[in-house]
Length: 311
Image 1 (tube, rainbow, N blue to C red):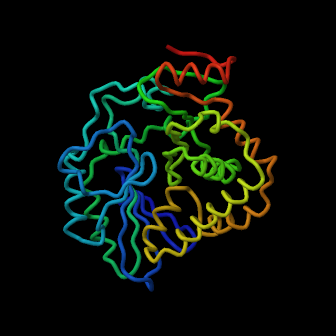
Image 2: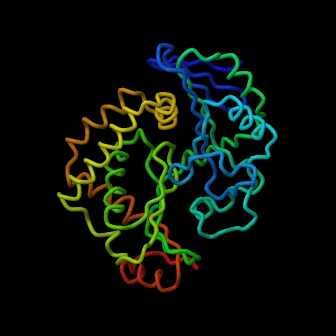
């Protein structure tokens, strides 16, 4: 049937296909949530539109997962490998293609599926339903989870104006200050695409017409305070959300326990500006990959004349 793991207040079943089923306390309201991590380069088939709520850069939640007809529809589509199809266009603006070059093409775009439920829900029904999904549906691309930030500055000529790199993993010491770094960038007016649920994954900062130099200006104490409070509020909302099954999916995807997630809120008060600048330097000033118009790239070259330029 699978491997059963006992993790604090919930248990996890790992099916042979790689689908994870996480069960919470039975005294909570009955809820079901399904999280799905995908290769960011995928395209949706028409039959998949409207099924999901998008979170971050490459993470989705199934809408109305509590509805058994919707849950059966999703499992059926996924078991037939008819939910997604790979984009045939080799887009240069996909960071995974920039980082891995040969990623994709003949493998499934689905990287992970996690089902979380609480309350008195028939465990065997959920297991049997998702046991229909074959092994080939989840790609389990190991190098996706072992990506490291690109070292050295790189500027890439492409089609869209953005700056990007690979995030730290949620259990890394850099992750919490990294979240605040991205929040500061967002507060400066730049759109950030990022999935905090996942393992090391791409993050993208889109140019929105502001002075691009603002992306790279070091954070200040007041920015750290405001950004830290915003991140803390996000954690509070996530933890206090009445949808406890989604919380199970979130912390499972992040590889954290509930206690570790709560400890992050305590750790925020000990974060120093020097520590934040160290993470800022590593992820935004060293190892960034950008893709954009010649004007955008020329501007970056002026800012970082030492960068390697890839055409």
